[in-house]
Length: 252
Image (tube, rainbow, N blue to C red; front, side):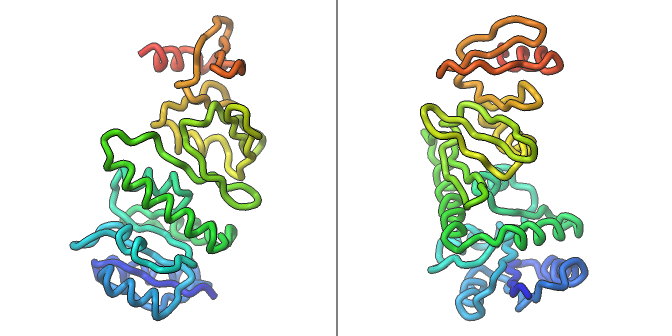
């Protein structure tokens, strides 16, 4: 049985979520629901949940502010939010989960299933939350570097700067992440996952097997599809089906 807390300022939304959890995940026992970050923080300290359903926005403060005050993060977090593009991107980069309101029962079931299958040790959970908070702070800085991302592997997580990545290569349902003069990282996600995560960071899917950081492209060689030369000497094929859309993107 997974002990869970709901922290949500809208009573109706909290009741709906509680009911949906009972319907789709009987293995989750909701300990209670709190309407504010202040009361939520106290409930976390007193009840020790294993899973937190945390609203992003409160009338005063945010769910992120609450996490910043938790002394020991030894629980999983699923954020609940109306659409907030930047917050969602920061959550994704941190390898944390979220549900868009109104909450869909299938997505709720899938999110809980991911939590159960991953069973993230508290050490990595704290790192992911720290990364999230740092990413949110970094996004407020006008001269901020690109984002840092959490990459799930079979042994835990790698935390790297997105701009360090040269390209990503599909390997079945997994991917390898290539950086300059470093051992490739095998992650337990497919290339489509990375495409959704990194498209706004100047990455482009040039082939069914390759996602390339366009900031590292130094030359395009023509051909049926063509090929890309990266600044480390790597050559990446461009598929015929992606050639035109890639050139339109790259050349502006």
